[in-house]
Length: 223
Ligand SMILES: [Zn+2]
Image (cartoon, rainbow, N blue to C red):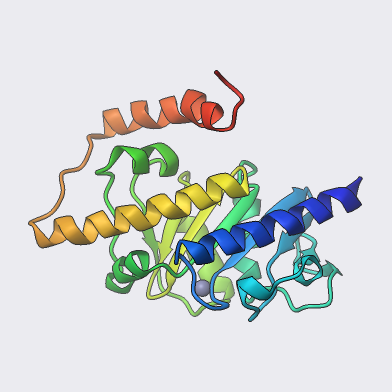
């Protein structure tokens, strides 16, 4: 059974990598993707491999401590960040880390994106906070990212990129699209004097409707 789940996870990760490359949310071999298969079993992209050249066997299987269980490649250098995020929230079952242009632009400014667009508030839950700077792959970056994401589904990584967490890879990919769109809107509105935030009361209402109904309709669990 676990064997079938591992095969399915490897296939889904490769499909997601191609979708991210096609959307230009990642370039070359940068960024990474992971999936929680079960409590102590995760699938993650290998380090330094282009998404258009990945085979199922290239996807590495690790436990919650990052110890390799299957696969010949070296797991992504960002494995600590992925595992720390899964440990921080049991709802996270799929993670996509991108280096998309507008998210990187805002991350280079070390700014938070305020809750000013409804679809962003629905899928991310509020502002997209920028995690404090730490070198890529470090324990400190994993810690800073968990602190920044705090109850939401995405964060920017200072001078680096974005991280998007969902229940499925499809949802994580959708969040990556929304993060990039929100970052672009932030850049545009900043040049026009700044956007106006949705007030906290309405942020709660919009988020609750998404979690209780809209996300279930997207997943085909509610009509
Ligand atoms: Zn990165």
